[in-house]
Image (cartoon, rainbow over the protein chains, first blue to last red):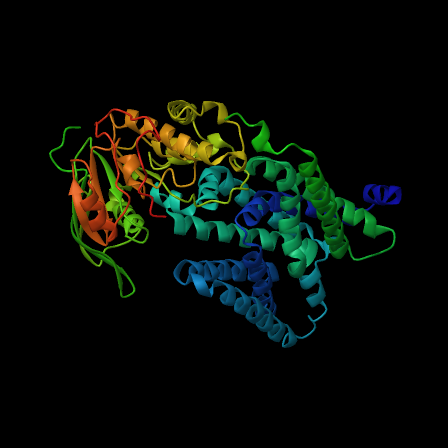
Length: 283
Length: 262
């Protein structure tokens, strides 16, 4: 571990990697809590996987794959949202279809793009050690956009996450707000692809927020806690993977999974040891 | 505030889920300041009628006007207390923040809640005698406490009309009395519509009763007698005795035998 921090001081690419992890953590902290409390992890998974279609197409046509990812993520978020709003019973199937079709399209495009097949693994599992400076700026811009939208509208997002029917009765535009929330999820997915890849994104999006949810009592506290947890997990995963030369993405995810398990066990034990709230509550 | 137009105006209403008619030819007017009780058997269309008044459903035929407007436009002036709250009880949110949800619809604004919003939430919680619950997690509340919080959420939006769907279905009889005591105070400044399966209980509080079983079977400002209940439920139900005194709360559980059909 000490080697790692000396290496960070000495080597620019590790500093870039650390910074990428921190930038991704801001997104996962802002949006992860909504994914967890609204129980749309499967939906977020569908958005993440369909992104490969956009990346493959961008490679084939010679654009920046991240721009392709951004386009595909937003389109699939809107598609899935539209299916859920108009055809509620079909949501599950539609997400599954988009999930697989997006990946299939991506693989076909990549197979037709000469010389690019080696990139496939880093799309799928991330490559935090090779984040160019330009992409750090791109991640920073996404974070800024997320901060701005969530900062202005967090009351509204909480309202549609908490009780959609009541929000509708109070005159809130529930459908547009829901679609906007899904677009924010899509932006966050793209933000994290460089760090852990599109297959593992869903873990970093949900696990820190789920752990935070076990110990906090408001969405705001969940956001702060999961941002800190995300930073600790990406930094810790990077450090753990450095000496044995393991791929950092999967190491980060395993660390997150372990934290989630331990937290769930401890939280269950703490709950059991407490007096049930009904017994101590005033009448 | 003194408008000649009724608060709720329903004429020739027909609604069906698929081909199954739930409401037929319902005509109903509620004037300002009334406290209307809607009673009837399960699946008699009570909750459907409320959803039509709230504009959550659209009638296949007939007309609904609330405060002289289509329901969707009048909705923000309605305070609604649902029978089953539409949220997960383990959602990480405090009672105060739940009540604040009722402040949406009073003008669009971004950013955090204002001081005025929080004061209004505190006032609403005080009115339902639940200010001490302000910091509690919504998941730790008992049934009766939750009902008060939902009532505060409905009141904080400054409604002209308060609609409650089975506000006492999930709580015991003593708490049921407390909720209706609150409504008895609120009716001095609000028009109230309450749905209940419990005719005997609510008739001591409301100013008028509408009996609904697919259509309005009876509709009375007088006391309910055995014949009406028989018309409504289509069978002999235990006879109800109760003193019919408008505006005066009645001791709970004294002479009332509840015609609870559940």
